[in-house]
Each structure stands twice: as structure tokens, then as C-alpha cells.
Length: 162
Image 1 (cartoon, rainbow, N blue to C red):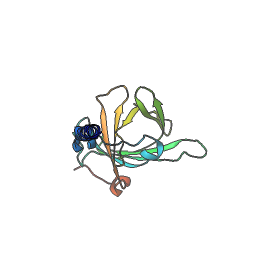
Image 2 (cartoon, helix red, strand yellow; image 1 turned 30 degrees about the vertical axis):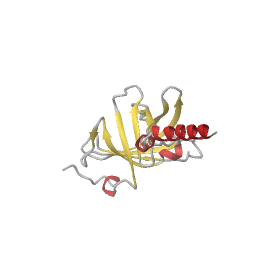
Image 3 (tube, rainbow, N blue to C red; image 1 turned 180 degrees about the vertical axis):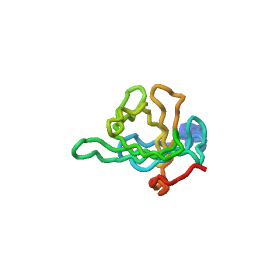
Image 4 (cartoon, helix red, strand yellow; image 1 turned 60 degrees about the horizontal axis):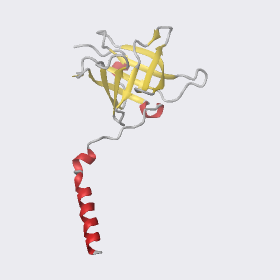
């Protein structure tokens, strides 16, 4: 009987020591991609491996609740990625599950401007960070970080390029 107890203790000790603490904690736990978890204000922090500076910016203000009349959710974009001036684009969006890729976000610009140029796979969603990858170009990757608000000089359109 002593041999069996000793053997079980050795096996248990071996199994517990097989995974180091570093290995057990290396995988972050991602949030499920849904309307509630992506809602809020986000700033583009990295685009295709390049850190974004203060000169160029893109903020997303993602609404959570659907409009009662239209059933659509809003997404406002404040950016100067393609212009020296700040632009405010309004749009609506939806999430769709792709069984191979995961959750895809797509949308339509307001004022009859048409569909977004791309649909995006949202991945690696944490409370303070998420990754958007163009669904038909996995080399085009944007990393967004959560922020409290869009700066006032961007909202008012008075931020100047230096």
C-alpha cells in the first residue's frame, strides 16, 4: 500500500512540475467579439507593424445599441490618414460570424457614400486592445487601443498638422 501512495505522489509531483508558471500564464484570455465588448472609443496605435505617431490618427467611436427605428449600430471615424485635415465619417456597422475566420465587422457610410472599402476580422480582443485584419488581405493589420475620448481639437476639426 505504501508503494502505491508513494507512486501516486511521485506522479502528481511530476505532472504539477511539467508546466512552468510562465507557460501556464503565456496565453492571454481574449474576450468574445460582440457588440458590448467592442463598444467604446478606440485609437489606432499600430498599422501594418508601424507605430502611429501623433501626426496621423484614426479614432473609432463604436456604438453598442442598435437604433430603435433602423436596427443599425453607429460607428464614427475621426481621422487624417488620407488628408492634412481632420475628417469625420459617420457609418453603421454589423458583426457577422464566419465559421472559418471568426467575427467579421463590415459597414456602410452614411449619406449614400456606400459600403466600407473592406470588411475586417476582429481578433485578440482584450478590454484595452483589439486587432482588425482586412478579411481578404491578411497583411493589412490595424491595432486599436481603448481610450477615454476623442481629443477636443480633433472633434472640433482644429488640430493642425505640424
